Image (cartoon, rainbow, N blue to C red; front, side, top):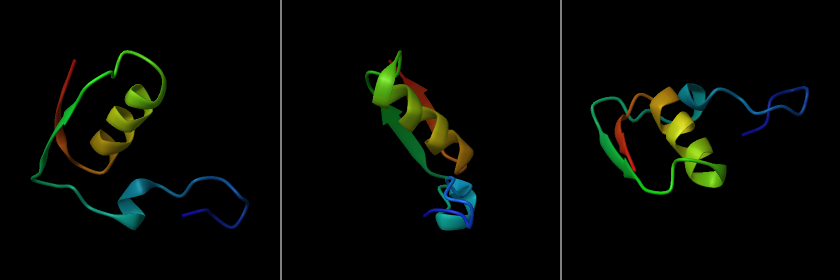
Length: 49
């Protein structure tokens, strides 16, 4: 999960959500927003609220 310098590795190296859909609630701020960003980075098509 962590890169060689302690930072987060790109999510695409860990998992692929390509072709999957995600519904993320509470994505306006905080953890929900971070999750929405990472799901999209992994390839998921997402809906947020």
